Length: 103
Image 1: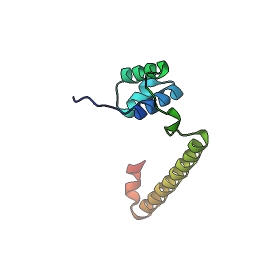
Image 2: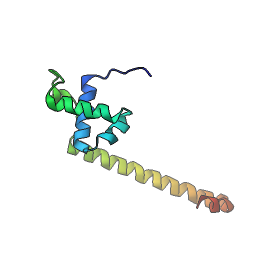
Image 3: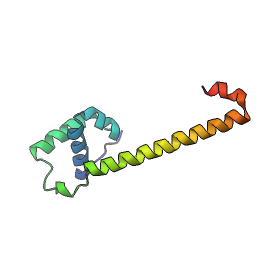
Image 4: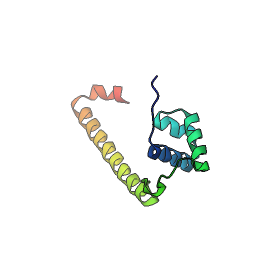
């Protein structure tokens, strides 16, 4: 397997998520990297070994943005649920014998 080189910005993003979540293994799974790598990056970040990178320039989501995204996702989920209900009603009207298989 070929080694990958990750940018400092990517490493800092992963480290920030790991520190916020408190679960390095979950963040590692999300990015498909080894948990030991996330642990090492976190240690390097806390020791200040990432060099002269402007950490404030790296975009992060604040609470307001997360809240807006959450509301948008809830709306999409509601629309999908409504769409499924409509399709099931149509199926029930046209092919009532198939409805037994859906439940």
